[in-house]
Image 1 (tube, rainbow, N blue to C red):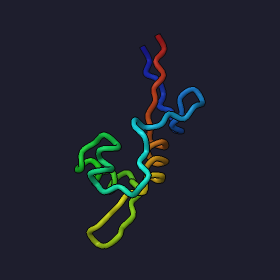
Image 2: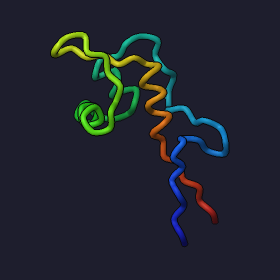
Image 3: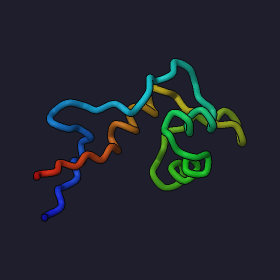
Image 4: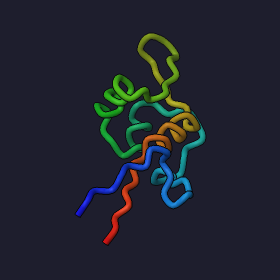
Length: 85
């Protein structure tokens, strides 16, 4: 069976698929962003370094995540596969 192609737009059947859970309405810290994305704190830092996760730097050591930017980032990086039986 051939593998299906990755959909680069983050859409499935023409409809955008949101990440799980409602988007919070305020700025998130690292723990909040990790919980919302469903990953560990370490993975959040790796995504910041490698994947360009959008952050707001408040000072040298304090970072926050804007929920709207985080939501848009998550939508653009979704991987949806179409399985043909």
